[in-house]
Amino acid sequence: MSERVLAIVNLIAHYVMGTEDTPVCEKELVTELISAGYGADEINAAFQWMESAAFNSTDSPEPAFKVLNAPSYRIFSDREQQLLSLAARGFLIRVRAMGLLPDPVQEEIIERAIRTAVNPVTEQEIKLITGITLLLRADDIWSREIGGLLERNWERSYH
Image (cartoon, rainbow, N blue to C red; front, side, top):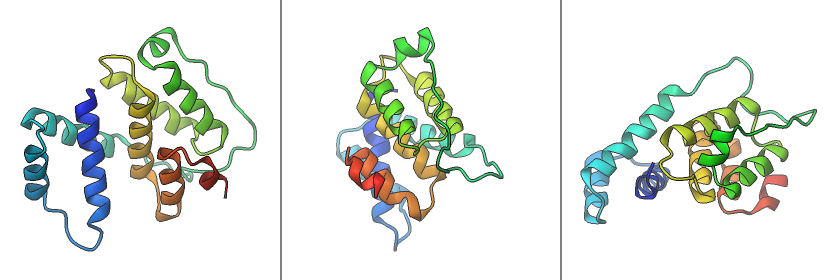
């Protein structure tokens, strides 16, 4: 996925979060994105990615987020190491070690990143994918932690 498409996904997420009291007007949003210089193909790709992310999330009877009791470690395959930058892998490891990212969610994030990667996924791109994935699964109680995660404010996640 290109950086421009990720930027569009980010803008859409901010737009939707900013319109909590009013309904989202897709036409107005698309008009704003086009006026900002994004092409129709890029906008469609962003909406398709978000739709795919929303429909592919698995609903499990267990809570999506719980504090981990025992540490576990994940070894990245050769292909994952090629398609995820060192900084992106480090970010996933840090978030996982903090107990904010359960194994199934981490696997979902890695799978989405790999599936859409053209170039190695950067730390910023993996943050966006992680944030969007967590937002799709999160309740209001987690919004503070997700915001801190994206802003690299680790203290907010611990308190």
